[in-house]
Image (cartoon, rainbow, N blue to C red; front, side, top):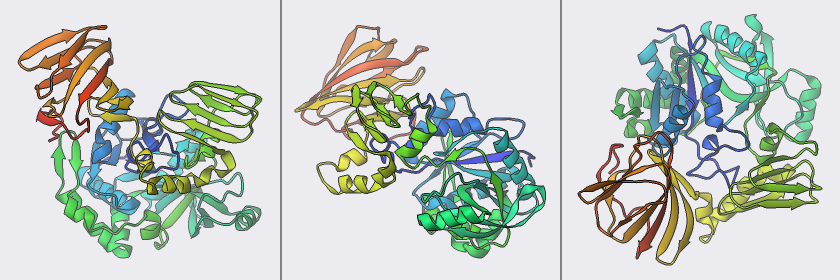
Length: 475
């Protein structure tokens, strides 16, 4: 049993509303937009006070497991556990699985703080006070959500109408309201007693499981069985697939919060954004005198109240106001900030066309348990990549049937295995890997290893990898 709060961070989403930087295989929670931390890392740091919190539990999926672990390692935050969902089943199943796991590990009365990994929050004194109020309220048996004091009649958020006040500063939940039309939002702000639905929660493990057993028994049964039959895999815990798949795809709001008589809301005035649009990124950034937020290679002239982000090319923006110009390595988005809530519609159109579908799924930079790579140039029978290997990590011992590779070291020192030979490659040195030859790349140093890889051959797909030995358990 613990008296501390156990953070549960949901980090498995694959949203694309911040396209072209965010994509299905590179979601927004793991991306650095205009700061030096990803949203996921900022969430980890927000719950890192050992006086208040246990080490967090992360819920993600197989595709993101190593990325989540590496980003936690980068900022020195340990994890209690990482639960892997075999498929997406929305927030009710994720919270239920976390509660079942925590009840088993810490006891039925352990308090969970369930957080999204892609929200931006200013953890000031108001935030800490809200957490303390929620802690007392949840300990008394309530299922607590956090309501953000509205600063405008926003139509992109759900709302909560507060009921009678409880002790410690919380209130009963009178009703939940879906994203309103502007006139309704204006009316709610004028009336008072309404807050934005933040989408994060606090409750005891046993309490949320009990409420689920009453209002969403299929979710509770699927989650508890998935935890009971879970298997350990390296540093991860794999929820059992067949059991988890039986859960309905439903949010925690719909499953229990809108049905239970024990819902409470803590009104809070800290700065919060669900980072669901480029407009939100602009508002959360540090603006210059002209109201612009710029990141990367960018020059702005006679431009106001705009967001400009470049990951590669130099962007020159002139004579515009209220726009978002976002350039990834392979795509550029230009639109008005006030229309950025509708980027999802654009992404659906891109996904529907065969010629552009890949732009919504894959990103030029892909992360692997050992580091990752960026695709720089692709042509007929050749591809150029930048590899980056984390200190102490190594790629699998592997071979390729259809391509040969040339590796050039540009930073750090590489340990290269080719056949039965092992050699050290320093900066400005290169090595050739013949087609079909067994090989491996490792970083024995203390700094990030960077290599340029030139692939040549008849087929260059990522599935032309025959892994012989892999320390990460990949086939």
